[in-house]
Amino acid sequence: MKTVKVQAQVDQELCTGCRTCEKVCPVYAVELEKQDGQLKVNIYLDICVGCWNCEQRCPEHAIAMVPCEPFDIGTEVSDFDYAEIEALCKKARFHPKQLMCYCTATRAEEVAAAILAGAGSPDALVRATGVGSGCGIECNQTILRFLEAAGKSWQRKKGSYQWMGRTMTAWEVPQEIRTNFASFRFDSDEELFDRIVDAPVD
Image (cartoon, rainbow, N blue to C red):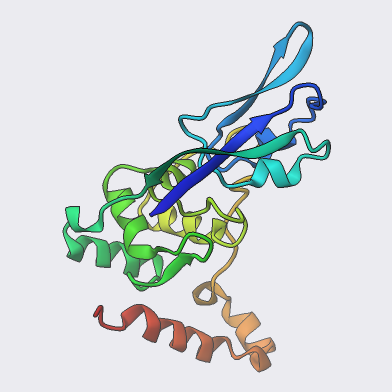
């Protein structure tokens, strides 16, 4: 769960219509439209999760994060059969209590619950749990792994920098690479990760 305390606000006088903000928003809350012949930014505050991505990446410093009426975004894990949550976490190769997003402290069990509740795309998971609404970098891969494990298909918004694709995990390293680069200890890493995934839930 995340408590949103700030949301983006645009200084239209400074905005040059470069679309950077639109490309980095994890929930597609930013859209540029032509107004009086110029591109201007619209921010949909009903879905903005206060992640700071647009503010931090705007080359013109045209976006500020301003205080808003605080609100929580999250999915209640106890609303779902925990055996189903555990099964989905294990399929995605996460322990249910494992942190998936360090910025928001979102755990795998909440992401699994959100998928069981119907979240079927990365932006939907961000809006449902807060995962990915911090730095917008570290947990992108974990989000994609979960959706893949759940069999969810979705399309990245055209032009977006977010959700470019999943990287290889320790379990997927080909045998040829394991053999040729044994000093990297892929097998022992995989064994360690398996022990974490299979550890009992307290």
